[in-house]
Length: 266
Image 1: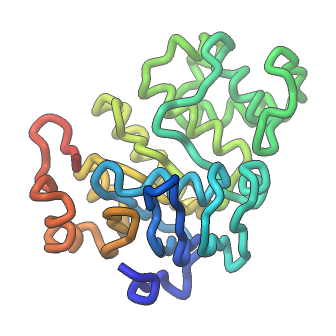
Image 2: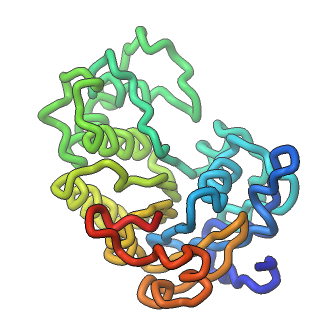
């Protein structure tokens, strides 16, 4: 779908407009256009290989686009470094969690508090101010990990690491939070906890763009959903509309139906 046929919305806080990205002869993003409204939880779904994570990488500066624009609050941030994107007000998590396994949960948070997009102090030099430690503990309390503050981060379950990574991102108080498959590998109890925390953050003014394969999680959480296929956005709309759109069903080759085991959109 061309950028001219996708309405990113005049109220978009974050938008991608006609973004192009190729790797050799492979066109990973083809005229990719979408928008994320302020204080929304917007889903980004699509078959494996449709370009979702590549788009996240372009938005957050880990990969440079070959064409098009990324805008945050109408400001062009195309091609910014990850550090500069982070400083501009966009935080992200990754599909595979990134924590320092050998130091404590609290020390992981203190590393985050000393960060400006990359780690600028040695992990072994965590001389933090009292206000940094207080803020770190408040965020751990918020995500339900305060009781594990002094445990090695490597001892956490995968779901707890996802919550830690969310707390890590919140240290910088970003405007927009990009979550890459937050529900993957999390048990139902922690998944409900994560969903609740995201909804609370949205009520506090945060904006989310969420890559997710879990259909139930998307329909229960998101206000709006963009669907990608073969590097382009093919349709956007409310979750209940997306589930029955023939273009989406065709893109998934009939696999949009909820999986009995994990509600996967694979």
